[in-house]
Length: 509
Image 1 (cartoon, one colour):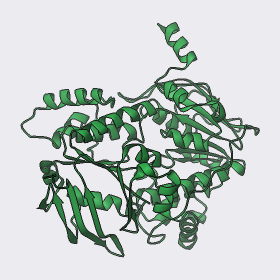
Image 2: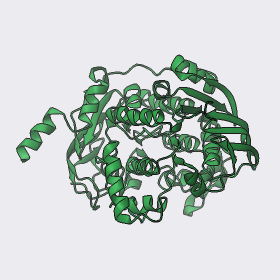
Image 3: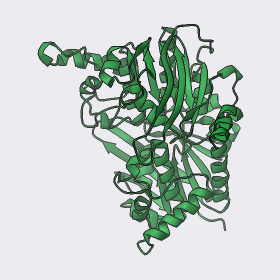
Image 4: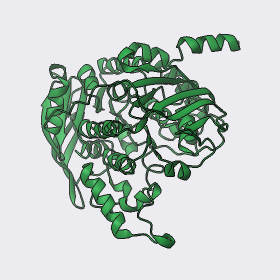
């Protein structure tokens, strides 16, 4: 007799005030299957995964695991059953080390030393290098995701849920991870795989369940489908194509030269002689594996760090190396950080009040807020960018990741900047929302804005940018036009293997 399905969901329903997140969802995952769950932001995918993992209690429906009815009341019970999950939004304690965070979710009989050694072995085995002794608050977003993946793999799961696991990996590392996932599946582990990268789903998964509006709208074999087919199933249409790349012809607006800067953090990355230029009317991208100096560079460009050498950062010819964020915004430089909640938005404040983080045009004389104007601005952004929210007073934390990202990007674009710096513009964002954000960024370029995009998603950079740099170990490669670049070449450079970098290392030695 064939074994029962690893996981069966029957008519799972979860209601929240004003919305039905899951509406009678049924799903079946076989042993050894790599099963994709695809849908727009807000389609109900994350809620469904949290129900499986015991982090959310369903209102109705039944769940069977290995043929047995189960009621998973919390993640600890899920892990005891053999279910592990890597969340898109991480569940890590900032003040603890990597090893201490991982230790919390493992067998209490293990010592911290044993857990530390296991992390080092597993991280090296899967190409997810991370120092288990580092405090989490010193890690970038990408490094934190590596911690979550390693923590899940250490539990030897029967069902592994992965939510956007490859957004911080090089193409070579993605291939290595896929080898590992296929090996796990061959050994009988079932994998639920959530990704907005359609080519990944087609390359890796054997089954795809599509959700829209909290319901299952279809099940298909993604290996027999095209990206356009999957996009139509998910959003009802194909995403629009972007205008072609073009050679820069405008004046240099953002000019960085000789930017050498110690990190100032014990586990940070020092910047070494960074030089880059962005012209009006072009989109320049910076590729790289997370933790190679992106955070330090963005701090220096946004004004969060004001200790850069004088003259090393210029905006339209004016030295802004020691200027703070407010002064830079007044001179036309706006910034979208990678952390949506906490840096891009205050979680408990409404969307209208979150405009005040970077916009001052609704502040009247004497500092009085013009609340009507503030709400009207928020409503305009909600409408134009298709943000799914209860209104301008909805708390930022109440929005899905993709909808909050659309609002933050819209907030900065609507300020009409002369320079826009965007970090991870579509991280964890569905196909439709990603296409909209990219379209708005391209429209900004067409209007003459200079745009700098920092992303770990090569597909996004190749689609969006006119020129590319690569950052590795705090050094920046020469720029290359996208038309002359290749995924293999950029992937090598992401390991620091461009000619000038090799020469500099040999000279230093």
